[in-house]
Image 1 (tube, rainbow, N blue to C red):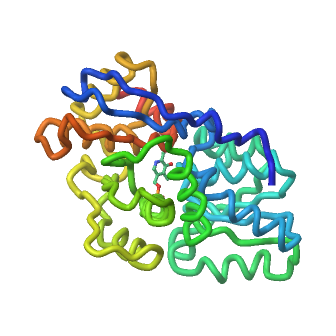
Image 2 (cartoon, rainbow, N blue to C red):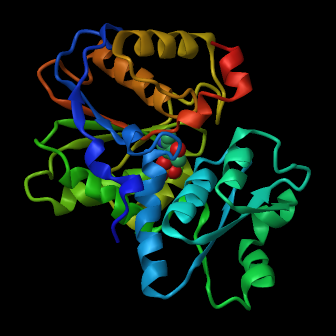
Length: 303
Ligand SMILES: *Cc1c(COP(=O)(O)O)cnc(C)c1O
């Protein structure tokens, strides 16, 4: 499958010179945010093999699931439009209008069919929802929420094969741990990369679930998901986090979002401060994208 809309060669590795991270001149940033201006870098990585398997199976309709602020929903809508797939998404919350926020509007712009779903059914009956609406449709293929699972992790693993050197540390924002699992898989399959340490920074309070995901996709013992930088939970922020996000943008010209990447960057700053990551070691910060999270009204109001 080749598609220039999602060319990953733009996702280069660049040296970071950001005084707000502390004293360390071996920090690099992997620019997956440059894969696409709207689609989260890691959401494209996670979708890629799902879409390939849909092509192979002769399907032309992707059906998925997401909350009203889902980067995965917008990514699926955009990728579908670019690659000539129909797309549908069950939306968590049947009170939502299609134009309730910029995520839903963008998904609609890309031609996605949105199916508002009450929260209980959404939580407990995804398979039945799919069967009821699309079970009779031979062209349809279900893609799990977030593009998770083995296929999602496989796309993430490719990031490791794009790195020009073996870093001592990789640090990234983690929500379902599909990205974490994919990075671990890449490190164990690319010769010479076995000793790199991955720091997965939880952006919400679900570390037990995340550990189970890693255990099922890419078992590692021991493996840690860092619970110290959730800032109160999913999409929660503090004035300190927002001040840091502003400082980072003004020092680098690189945007981050308060839901995911700013939290992981903040963790990096702390680890440099405490010496857990020492100045002689090389660090790759994975910028997973997520720009839409910065541009919501509530986040902009806090800047
Ligand atoms: C979804 C997302 C993540 C989390 O990825 P997981 O594979 O669910 O852990 C991180 N960063 C951004 C920008 C995302 O959109």
